[in-house]
Each structure stands twice: as C-alpha cells, then as structure tokens.
Length: 497
Image 1 (cartoon, helix red, strand yellow):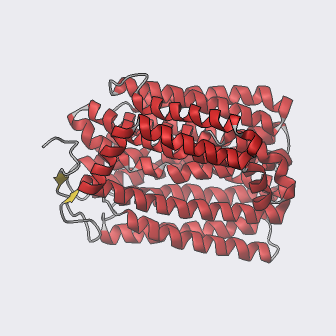
Image 2 (spheres, rainbow, N blue to C red; image 1 turned 180 degrees about the vertical axis):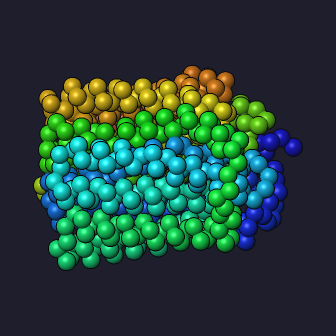
C-alpha cells in the first residue's frame, strides 16, 4: 500500500498516560490534532482580542499605544530565548525512540542559558528607551511573564503535546488560562488600576499556566529532567541556529513597526496602528497551528521522499487558500464598522489598517507552512533567507514612509514586506521539494479569485454586500469546477478515515 494512501496506519507508541496507544490512521490523528490546536488558538485569539478591546476602551488610544509598546518590546526579546528550539524539539522527539526526557532537558537548559545572557541586554535596552518609570516597570513585568514563563516553560510543553498527539490537553489548559487572564484584566480595569497593575495580573496568569503545563507534562507525558548531554546540546544549538536567526527576524518583523512608530511618532500613532494590526496577527496566530501540526507529518514523509512533502503541502495549501480568500475579502468590507464596534469611535480612522493588512492573513499563514516544509527537509537556513530579506525591506520602508504618512506608512511597509517573505518562502519551498514554480494548487484558487473580484466589480451597483454574495457564489462555482478532482479526493479521504 502506498504511503499516501488514506487508509495507511502506523502504530502510535504510548509515551505516557495521555499518549494514544492504539493504531489509528495518520489522517485521523492529523485532523484531530489540527482541530484541538485550532480550538486552543481560537480561544487564545478571542481572549487576547477581548483583553485588547477592554484595555483600548479603558485607556484610550494613547494608553493602548503604551500597552502595545510594552508587549512588543517584551515579545521581541523573548525571541532570543526561544532560539527556534521548539520546532527542532518537536522534530526530534517525533523521529527518535524513547521517552523524550533527554531532549526536553537539553532544550530547557539551553533556553535558560540564553535567558542569562539576555538579562543585561534587556536592562540596557529598557533604560535606553527614555520612557517613564511606570512604562519601564511594565516592560520588566512583561518580560518576566512572556520570556520566562511563557517562552521558557509553556511553549516547550506545547511541543510535547504536539509530538505526543495530546493536543486536547493544550486546548483545555488554554481555556483555563484565558478565562483567568480575562478575569484579571477586568478586575484591574474596574478598580482603576494602571499599566503596572495590569501587567502584574498578566504575569500571575502566565505563572499559573507555566506551573500547570509543567506538572501535567512531567506526570503524564515526558518526565522533566535537567540532565544534559554535551553532544546533544551542541546538536540542538547547531540545528536551531538558522531558526533562531529566522525567529528573531520574524519576531522583529512583527514588532518593529510598533517600536519604530513609537520612535518616530507618538503613542497615539502606535495605538491606531496596533488596533487593526493586532486583529490581523491574532487571526494569523489562530490559523498557523493548522500548519504547525504538519511538522511531524512533513518530517516523517521527508525520510522517504521530499516529493511527498510537496504533494501533502500542495493539497493543504490549495484548500486553505480556497477557504480563506472569501474571508479576507469580507474582512476588508466590514473593517470600519468592526473597528468602531470593537474599539470605539476614536479608532474609526484606523479602519484602513485592517482593510489593507487583511491580505497578510493568507500570506503569513502559507509562509509558515512553507517554513515547516523547509525545516522537515533540513533546509532551516533557507527559512532565514526569506525572513531576513523581509525584515530588511520592512525596516527600510518604515523609516522612509512613516515620516510621510504616519501609521499608514507602517501599513504600506508591512504589506510590502509580507509579499516579499511569501514570495521567497514559496520559491525556496518549491525548489527544496523539487516542485513547480507555478503549481496547480496556487493557480486554481487565484483563477477563482479573479472571477470573484470581477463579478463583485460588475455587481457593485447593487451594494457592497449583495455584490459580495454574488461574487462569492461565482467564486465557489469556479473553484468547484477547476479543483473538482482534488475535492473528490478530499471526500474520499474523509470517508476512508
């Protein structure tokens, strides 16, 4: 039986009380992991968005700008501690026999060695910002929560859940975490607390989550041990090095707009940009786990043939594009009323942020899938090429366009950078897996999209939403025709599973 057959099964070895111990089709396991991961990220997205809305309404545009700046600064430095180790950790414990104890200990130890090295850099950077004492204190609190508890413990535990097919546990813990986090935010804002008290509440929920997942992983999946193997530490360091650089580039790419905006303008411009940008990046964070669960599958297929990675990636990318394009168009149409509904009338002027950056949802999500494919075929350095090129474009354009157009200059720069990173990642992925530079999986959704936009254009006299509905119908019919065989394959896989 062929490897790609939907009825192929492989034994899933139990590595703990929560790990599956029966034979299941990999299609079922991947689908289940995807659903649970999307559930967890959906809860994260909803919780983070709700918290942002509450903060924006309570503190106003300027206060929301300060809040966004603190989060951006803390998140940027957390990339140095992450070092890209999480992806390598998942890849290795998916391939290797054993309980994963040694791999977990090596990765955990490396992360905290990086933390020690980052501490003086964080202190110097925070003091050099010229911010008020309250904002500097909030930065330290944010760094402790995001770097130590979230990056140091929680993300490693999430890697264990993914590699051991226990994503339902991640979803449950995420729900508990977001409920507690939202309760803390509400209590602080209702009591009239400022930025420092708000980040104290966020810090406590990050601490709770880290302790919870740490105990669960240790007791039920992989025993936590701080035993190191010098050769293995060197292996993880070397394997993660290109990802570390890429992750820093990507992290800087996500956060530098806010930092440069604050440097060149003020908190109000930061607040306006952050309002729409946080929605878009929240959606990306929600969607990308659907591709994150592919890393173990890509890694297994790459052992046999890189072309198998191309086939699997192409099918998933085509279906993703077909599903997300109508949503992106709808998001652009409702951007202004949505911004007013969520954040209030002062944020209406930020609607173009959401309208223009809506395209980033599918650009960034597919770029993430290409990254997973490159990692699986041992081309992690190629991930760096795309992310670094995009970062350079974004930073240069920000310094050129923000002085001219304020927060909209950051929007234009971000879109240009995302197009660059998508294009490079796509070409490198296709080259690595020996695929075509014009694959059918990208041409079919694009052809249907052209019909979608054309029909909307000719029907615009009927109104924006009637035109959208008519265009959507034409889009679905067109895609059903051009991708008929792939849709039939999908139905067959679903029935066989």
